[in-house]
Length: 346
Image (cartoon, rainbow, N blue to C red; front, side, top):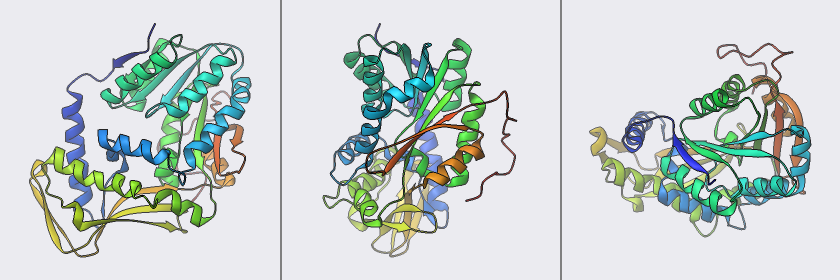
């Protein structure tokens, strides 16, 4: 049976997404300093550009994680045991890396169903089509929902053990406190014995890091500038892309690559959808993304702060990237609450 797409939050998803986009753009461009959430990079054009970025020689992250999956799939399965399980991908994207893990698991004789959770119906439907074509024997669904709603639905329909994937360097888009809060909510959504596999880019030579986020071909610059094009298309904006420049830098205090779009002149931009004009000074920046890099010790602190128990840690041969395997252990530990202060400080 092919992978199906199921919408858990009915309504006009496109209208809802556009309204949220407009609200967050209004908030971000009204703030000082200006900022925009990086999740809005991923319209159709942005998704094409990120696939191009992943193919760049300088962008090592995707290849490193793919290597980990090829080399360590058997160890992951040993941690899961021999019973059937559910493989749950949070934000699978084009499914490129997840497909490697699915193939390796199938080759090793694992019994599992696949589920993805994403708020985009079009992305979920495309992923379902791709996986059904590549893996005809795979069963499962791509769920259109936020993470909490999707996980709650899976918990209601099945008590099978879960391996939840949060891959790439998605965890690096948040501060330590933001990552801890997200993972705490994830811990609360899962059952005792469930596992989470979290990808994290590790600290390394700054030259290597900068090259991965500011490639000489300008693909990453185009990816960031497409955010302005999206606001023009969907929110009735009049951004002149020639009057903004992409810039990124390494910030050692936060251990993050920080990305910006910088106004090249004093200018005013109007967005019809929010009924506002926004003034920019020359050289004023819009912050578009943080990509935090972790040490192995910080990953352990993050697991502890969110309530997880470390089950395993897998790295590529160069030690540039890590996938941390954490277990939910609710029978022996007090559940972390949403309000309690952090146990680890960063």
